[in-house]
Amino acid sequence: MKAEDLKLEEIVTFNDGALSFRGRRVVLHDAHAFAQLRKDLTDMVGLEPARRVLTRFGFAWGQADAGAMKRVFRWQSLEELLQAGPVLHTLQGVTRAVVRSLRIEDDSSFKMEIDWYNSGEAEEHLQTLGKSDHTVCWVLCGYASGYASFCLNREVFFVEEKCAARGDKVCRAVGRDRLSWGSDIDDTLQFFETEDIQAKIASLTERLRQKTREVERQQKRFQEFGTLIPPGIAEVRSASFRKILDLASRVARFDSSVLITGESGVGKEVLARYIHDNSPRSAGEFVAINCGALPESLLESELFGHKSGSFTGADRDRKGLFEQANGGTIFLDEIGEISPALQVNLLRVLQEREIRRIGENVQRRIDVRVLAASNRDLEHEIKDGTFRDDLYYRLRVVEIRIPPLRDRPEDILPIARFIVKKLAAKLSLPSLRFDADCIEYLQRYSWPGNVRELENALERAAVLSENGRISRAGLPSCVFTGVVPGHTPSYGPALSLKEVEAAHIQKVLRHTNGSRSKAAKILGIGVTTLWRRLKEIEDKPQKRRIGD
Image (cartoon, rainbow, N blue to C red; front, side, top):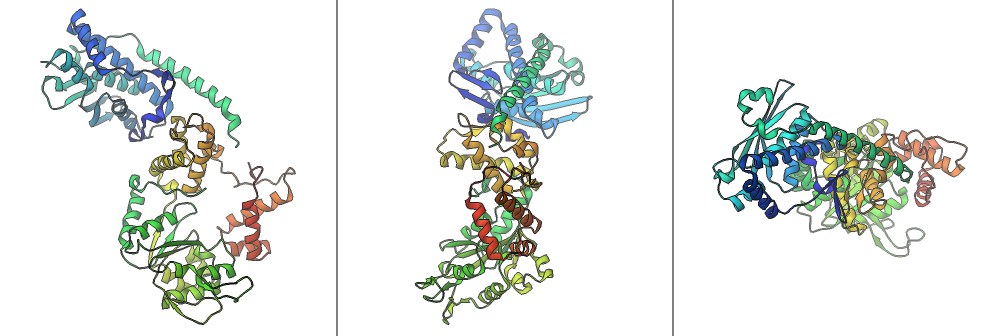
């Protein structure tokens, strides 16, 4: 987990009459009322006692938040955990906190500088007490001190050096561990004198852990129960995918053929649409077809069209997808699945920019850009003699390889949040959001099915959500166990013959990396028969998963 990944709606539960911050009740308070409290405290007990009360209040608040952050999330580093404190203050509307610098040297030294913009505390002071000749962000200093002390398990104190309440442009505080401060902190220590808050917070944290484990045990009974939604391109965080988008943007301006490769579910069609939408052909049609989903005869008719009477069932002239995409883009997904004969026809189309419908001799000119995709190693197919090298080079003027989701984990959370927004509209769940307990599992899972698997898992979790909150209980068990269903199928006596057949077909397809021609050869059946069997498997609802 990184500090920048925190979202208020995922860590605070909004229930009727109560707000819960990861199991700890919180309340909203009015800034004007708190300003009056500050004034009353100062008037009744004096400036220094008021400062002591408010500093202690902030210190306890900071330690409680730090305890929640350590309990709920697994942080990439101690630095990320420490920076989460300022992020929380920003999310809570207290101030806009910006970390200027952070240095940790084992147990020997700690220093952190924070700027507080639009400090609510400075505003409260100015509102009721007027301009000050001293710094006034006592709650903020207490919070930062308590948060860092809990995270580092040693005394840390923040001292404000600049403050908007006395005319400075920004409020600024410096935090150091007690040893690093030396005698410079002596005059400030009186405002931090308090009981053993750390021990109380640790005790509360352990009780909340036990409560969370109990809730998980009660929800296990729900854990045994798609359209690829495009990732939020504007929210890409990984350097690898940013490079891909940059390359796609550059090749989009030209009509050159592009071969998009990568594992199933990474978003090859999404990238193809991105190229089309950013090309001079964007006003034309984008036509996509999965070449592996149809037998050879049907695929040829779909691509090139046919003349009436050219075969049984051809009761009228029909134009193919190449003609339909004229002036636009055609996307040939799973191009590695097409037969050698169809490869020859496709090569001629790419060379001559002409097509001929089945059953006629008329050559028809086409103006179409070709984008292709494959999840297979086509160079290996060329060596095996199953894919033509001349067609390969025609298709691969530019190759763009999309890395799997596991190689760009920093993109998982932005994509997941984008998917949740889409699901909220699709399922009419306007308040749909994540519960913090599932975020870590989403980021740690390898997602062998990539974005498609992520989308399906989140739709399942959304359907099973309670009060619009996606929790760990709704996710497939593999997400938090790491065991991918179907990778080690077991053909037990409780399975029907059809279920065993379906499992074996899927296992052979995995063995051939999705090649239906190779799978059909191993199974001893024709490609058309395999296609029909797969269609039956997809259409028939499964009572249980093989290998679960």
